[in-house]
Picture 1 (tube, helix red, strand yellow):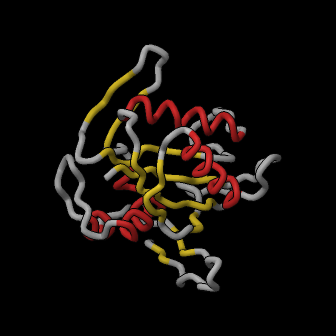
Picture 2: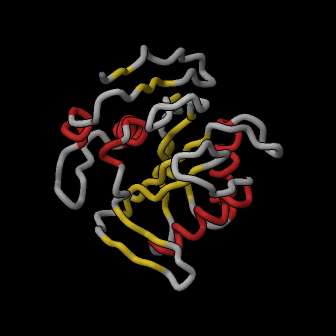
Length: 182
């Protein structure tokens, strides 16, 4: 299974609010030959590290693609740029963030000639509630391919202070209470 993380906390001129930009990104991926098998519910998440920046909309998608990991990361970066992401400082607000979370059971670190880097599984995924909660929605039995830690153990080991909740969906689901770790 191949998983990508999606996030945004700023509106775009072309697509509007973050949730719409995330949907547009999945559509653009499909145009590039990356098929979305399924997507987690959308979550609202506090910035990590905590700041006064707008909160994020986050989710995870399971995809199918013929692209190897490094080429897939290149496609994700291309789509971020097409949506209007400009990279500045680390943890800055963004119109779109697409990350390769896991690529089957591969463990690798690779760099292309242009400097594009693929590290799988994503090196900070186990520290991010906004990745683990939606990933757990898609694959509750998933285990980290490098250290074989099960999903529920990764969630139980999340650093304190992260806040996230399910957002209402089109079917009227109201979301859950805040999941707060202090």
